[in-house]
Length: 226
Length: 199
Image (cartoon, rainbow over all chains, first blue to last red; front, side):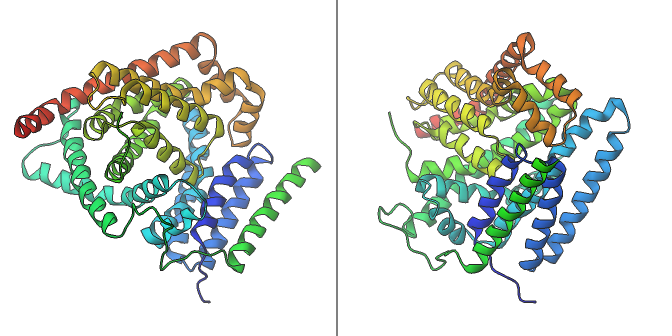
C-alpha cells in the first residue's frame, strides 16, 4: 500500500481539538477512539515502526496504571499516568510532525492558519530543536565524564550548573547560526512567503478531518443516549 | 522599550525548547507529591527554569520576550494534546504582566526579574486554581472524564481552593522567585566575564 501524505495542519487541528472533547463525551470512548484513529493515521502514512513503538508505550503505561491503582498509596501516581496515557495518541501524532516534516513544510502549513509569522517561526524552531536535546545532553555528559565530573546530590546547584550552562550558551551560539540561515532565506521579508512545499488541503486531508469529526459526533451522540 | 527582532525570536525559541523540557521534567517530579504537588508544579518548574528565564532576560532583554516564550509553550502543549483553555488564558495574561514588570529595560534588577518570574508561573498555577474555585463542577466533570476519580478530584480541588489555594499560589511565587536567584548565582560570573571582555 502506498503511503498517504497528510497535510501537517490536519495533525495540528486534530491535536488541538481532541483534548478539549473530554467535556462533551465519555472519557473511555474518546480514549479508545483516539487510539484507533491515531493508529489508522500511522498505517495510512506508512509509519509502521512508529506505530509499533506507540503501541508498546501505550501498553506499558496502561500496565503501569493498573499496577499503581492496586494500592491506595500509589493511586495518585496512577491517576497522573492515566492523564498522560490519554495524551499518548496526540503526542505520537506530534512526533510525526517533528520527524516526518521538515522546517519548510511546517512553516508553510502553519502560515495557512494565519498565525503571526513571528509565532510561526518560533514554534517551528522550537519543535525542530526539542528532539536534538538528547544528543546535546549526551555531549555534555560525555564532556563531564572526560573531566571526571559527576552528578552529585550533595551539591545539587553545582551539578545542575554543569548540565545547564553549556546548554544555554550552545543555544545562544546556535541562535546566531539559525538566524543567519533564516535571513539568507528571507525569513524577515515583509511580503507573503512562497515555498516549494505549498501545503494545500487535499481530498485525503478533508476525508481524514471528516472521519475525525464523525467519530467525535458519534461519541457525543453515544453520551446523550447513555 | 525595544521590540523583538528575528534574531531575538530565534533565541527565545531555542531557549523555550530547553524551558519546555525542564518544565516537563519538573512537572513530572512534582506529581510525586500528590494533589498539592500538582497545584505547586509550576513553582517547581519555576525554580528549575529560573536560570533559563534569567538567561533570556540578559541575552534578549526586550519587550514581549516572556509573552512569546509562554505562547510557544502553550502552543506546544496544545499540539501535544495537553491544551486547556483556562490555563492558556491565565498563563498568557501573566506573561504579559511579567513583560511589563521586567522587559521594559534591557537589564532589569534581579529582584524585578524574580517578581516577573513569580507572576509568570503563578499565571500557570492559576490555570487550575481559578477553574476549581469558580467553575468547580465543570472542572471536576472535565477531569473525571479524563480518567480521574471523584475522590481524587475532591482532593485536588481541596488543594487548589481556600487557604490551600492561597498557600499554593504563595509557594509557586516563592519557588519561581528563588529560581531567578539560583539562575543569577549560576550565571553572574559568566555575564561578568562577558561584560569585562566587552569593556
